[in-house]
Image (cartoon, rainbow over all chains, first blue to last red; front, top):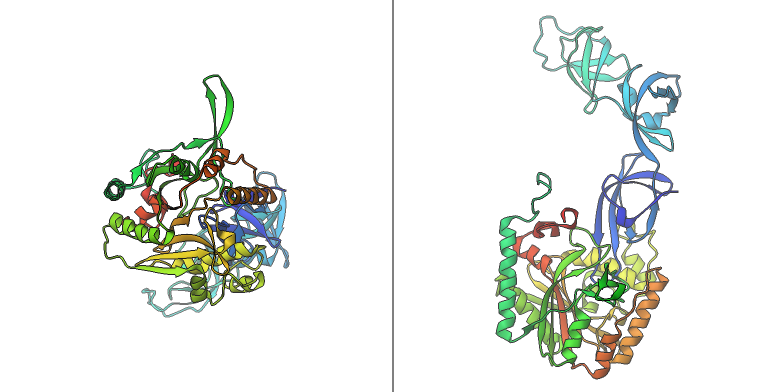
Length: 190
Length: 324
């Protein structure tokens, strides 16, 4: 099993702590001139995204996390799992709801996603920053209002609900920023 | 350091000038006191025995000699003491020293050290001289000074007696430090953790803070005084949350020195560190009789950080190791 000494610690390094994968956010070396050296480390859980602080005795080793990034195509959801395919090897991988996180709100079949794999299985799914989705339901809104002020809720084909301007109607395609969950613009057909 | 081409220095021209100015003022200070500047070897056959330090190494060949390992000094302490034995009188040295495995906001594997020895002076008097030097170097003659014993320091900041508290009490005092629960440390390790994480960041804010009289287990090369319990006659200077200097009433007893070397090397072995040859020439000098002396080493890069308001050591180095 690969491991890293605290001397190799740096931002971005992926390590195992208490059986879970973490990425080092910040590493600080603390040492009195004549005494024990420590590494004060801030790590982010690759499972939950939570940032915690750890203290290591310098010179200790920790297990490396077998974590890497890849791009996969989303295929379908069977009600329990979400299935992805590696477009080069055609290998199929499944992700559970915890790994999907917010991505379930934004991706539809055929979308390419950045996927973090841990021991070969999807750990987290990053949807594209911008997606184009169809509105399946929204109130008709007031005729002649093109200002967009105020807005109204609209349900998208994925089930997500976003606020859209009053002039946007059911059946239209809109562009959404998945990082903020906000409407960006109307999108062209197709 | 973003935005710099690979050839460019990471310290700006104003900082480089501040370094030159600082060195000039320090040399002026010692010239006025009649302390002589000396040079001792950077590369030596003996390595440090300090279990907390690791020497960088190089090799030497030539002049018919078989290639042999030489160690880069972690401080010029031992050869400077040999000069004292040889009758040098008060001496100082400004040199680069090297410590493997040390890198961070306040650490760099090579750094500039000012070390000086004052035969005949006691360590308490030397503390006032250190304060005067720093005030002079920083051009802040009014910089206030505070003196606290190691025991007072822990009592003031943590409400515990560092000489008496057991490992469990120290572990509990460290509970507020994130990630400390999983640590396995000895008593000295807990003291170091508490000092660096819970006390040091608050020390020396706007003033020079000296901490003196350390637990005997933290004596390094300081003399032990029985008062009535043993304390190590050692001091440290803190300024702006940084450890700046370390000084001793120097150990002059060769038998005790040999015991400490031996204990150091046993500690190194227990930690799986290399056992290095110790400095027999230094022990022979102690046998010949070293004058009673106080001595101190001060980190010049950190002093320059204070002078220039820098928060990272890289800001005061022309070329940090990653650009060296």
